Length: 70
Image (cartoon, rainbow, N blue to C red; front, side, top):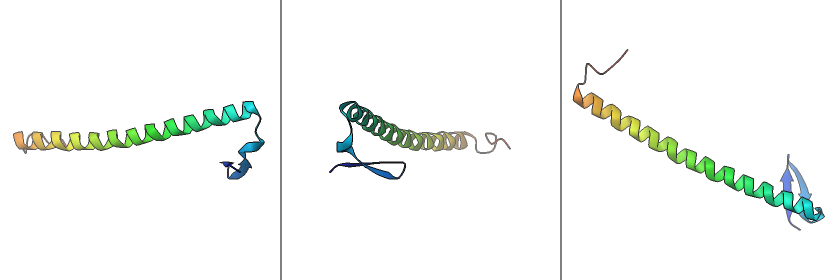
């Protein structure tokens, strides 16, 4: 029997009505989309860090002393 867990409680998905099964499908779609967005966010944060480091290196190479702000 397929089970689903909500708030640490296991339920049998076969006990759902047709409208409940539709809601479950929507919930699963949303969870998958959130995971994909979180994965995309992780990639974007990594890219941001790389670009920041590249810009910092360019600025330091241009003039190592005058570009630093304290």
